[in-house]
Amino acid sequence: MQVFTTPAAFSAWSDAQRVAGRRVGLVPTMGALHEGHLALVAEARRHADVVAMSIFVNPLQFNRPDDFTTYPRPIDDDLAMCRAHGLDAVYAPAADAMYPTGFETHVEPGALADVLEGAQRPGHFRGVTTVVAKLFGAARPHVAVFGQKDFQQLAIIRRMTADLDMGIELIGLPTIREADGLALSSRNRRLTAEQRAAAICVPRSLRALADALAGGEHDTTVLTALARSVVLAEPLARFEHLEIVHPDTLQPLTTIADRAVAVTAVWFGDVRLIDNVLLAA
Ligand code: PAF
Image (cartoon, rainbow, N blue to C red; front, side, top):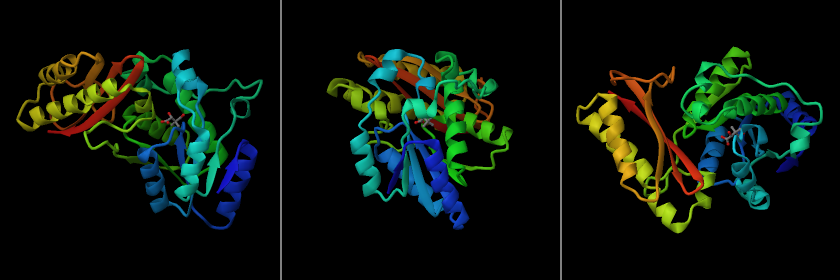
């Protein structure tokens, strides 16, 4: 496995792969790897001959300085995990290689970034689109794999890739969960044991909502209130939002007539967890 720390060196590796006729797969991450990331790598392998992972904690997408400084960065463990799982390359640039002095160009997402997470975290998606565009520019992959846990992120990256004619196949992988239903996330490792136990109220609330829909309740006000009540019953949880929107437009729905997605964010201490469930009437 080769490890690159500059865009030029990573691009040279990727160019050589393409010249040799190999399909290049990219799995963009911020490290603190877990089984969810490994599932993305396994999926990339199914669609590419060589797979690279980027590991970069992107300062541009953090709207809270404390979240950025406390974000876990176990780079040695991450590299060992990548080696053990057969990654062909890792791109782990330092911040000044990614954003050298004089850097000033950003990718401005459209209306998809104004709602849900975007409304709660100003500037977050602009940071995501900018860094992903840079990662795509350095890697020029044939295919890139993202988790559906960040549902809105994936929708925005799909839009960017199409709008900017990037010609990259995007694959969204369903969320990988612990046995009790909690979505895998690098932030889970910052939960105390009590908060970790309490956090199952998040998937439980989404399950209650999906079950009520399956039972014939289509009114999103009723469904939202039901899910919210599951979280509010947990004393260690601080409910932030839960919305039911159309999966393509991310616009709110009053009733579920066809496809929908329920997205939520809940706090446990200073850790913010997000989750979602795809719904069909
Ligand atoms: O989902 C993430 O880990 C990040 O938002 C991403 C896509 C790697 C961009 O920094």
